[in-house]
Amino acid sequence: MRNQSTYYRTEQVPEPARLSALAAVALLLSLAGCTVGPKYHQPPAIATAPPPPAYKEIPTPSPIPIADGAAPAGTEWVPAQPSDAMLRGKWWEIYNEPDLNALEDRLNIDNQTIKEYFENYMVARAIVREARAQYYPTVTAGPNWSRSRGSANLGNNTGGVSSAKAGSTSSLIVLPVDVSWEPDLFGRIRSQVHEAQYSAQISAADLENERLAEETSLAEYYFEIRGQDQLQKVLDDTVTADRKAFDLTQSLYDTGVTNQIAVVEARSTLESAQASATSVHLLRAQYEHAIAQLIGQPASSFSIPVRPMTAVPPPIPVGLPSQLLQRRPDIAAAERNMASANAAIGVAYAAFFPTVTLSMTGGLDSSSWKHLFDWPSRTWSLGVGASQTLYSAELGPGLSQFVSTYNADVATYRQTVLNAFQQVEDNIVAVNNYSRQIQQQQASVASTQKALDLEIGRYETGIDPYIDVLTLQTNLLASQQAVVGLQISQMTSSVALIEALGGGWDSSQLPTPRQVTQKPDKADTKIVQ
Image (cartoon, rainbow, N blue to C red; front, side, top):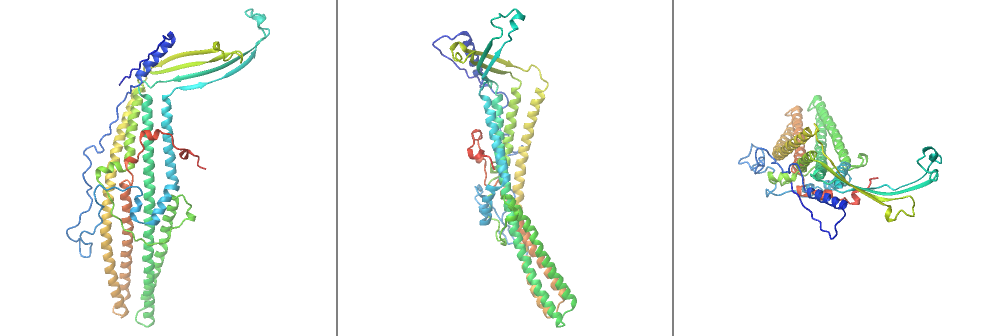
């Protein structure tokens, strides 16, 4: 607690009442620098150890191939270098997808959930200015005019009022101004302001976290659609191949080379492929509708052109684990939540100390407008009041409540950090493993396609039955579908990795307490029609 003394120097000795008032103000101002409660120190992000020096799941080239036909050594997906690189700004542009870029730009303009979080942030900033208003005195004015007439019979009954005054009419004009001020002697208001400022920063971090979630959801839906387009192409090609197989089987049956069972099996295979090709439209349409909702457009008037997926995950700069604490808005929100809880402890501490109120009333009183502004019409009064809680059973438990809340927020902060490390490691290993699985599965597709081509030749010559062709057709379609599924999972996992890394955000973009205190622009406070 620090006291700042203030000295006054005058040439004339003021009247005693004024001297007493000035002395009281000087005393209060000297105490105004005192603040009770604990000073905030950010606790370690991990209770047991500092952040690790590197991510464990960053892949290194394998010394030998995994197996015959598998991905050769050194072909796995690896993060970008150098290790301390970071994504900046529009992170989705790393995929070089113009359609995705256009959709993301629309998202940040028209998404209604982002707008909701933005307005919540504006509310939090207004609460900061509302809390700061307690620093200043409250001034009220209550002008009043009244005209009254007394009873003419009042003098005859009371004997205390002359008959000349009885029944007279009088006026009263009052122009009062009341000023009251509660000096922040023990930092209660300061703690409330800090609590509101930190809460506004939490709201700003929540806004960025929600924005990141909406951006990554859109990117994942986009790659899901591109995956469905790729699957549609696979199934359409399968339908074409199965139709040729059916026509071939029908011709062989007509010439007596094969039997009717082969024709029925070929027709069943074709019809099954046609049904699968039709079912792809359902999931694609649902993802398309989800994107329309994200960009604030009715699903009935929105569509995305069909284009099979050709993208592969780009090298993503994951940076260092220690940087992750500065890159994720949810971690920033959790840290500011601790600071807000610490300020709330200061408010609870201030409740143990007295509250002082300064009041002053001045104005003009007159019975006529003519003399209202004459010097004798002035009135004034000064007052100092103090309030101290002598006993309250609620104060101790209330303080313990805020201390426990702070401790819980520390645990939440550390758990958020641990979750962040887990999500990054999970998605690094996912993207890398999917990369290797895709190459292995593509090798399986190539082998199955070669076997099918050979088997069709044997079937055409009548060496093997159609059931052998059918088996390879089924295996080939399953392998092709598995490749597409892995490609979708790989792309969505890369998006999830970027989300786990915080996108293109870092803590330097979090507004400072001074910035959240400033009055927003008119464009930020306009009413949405």
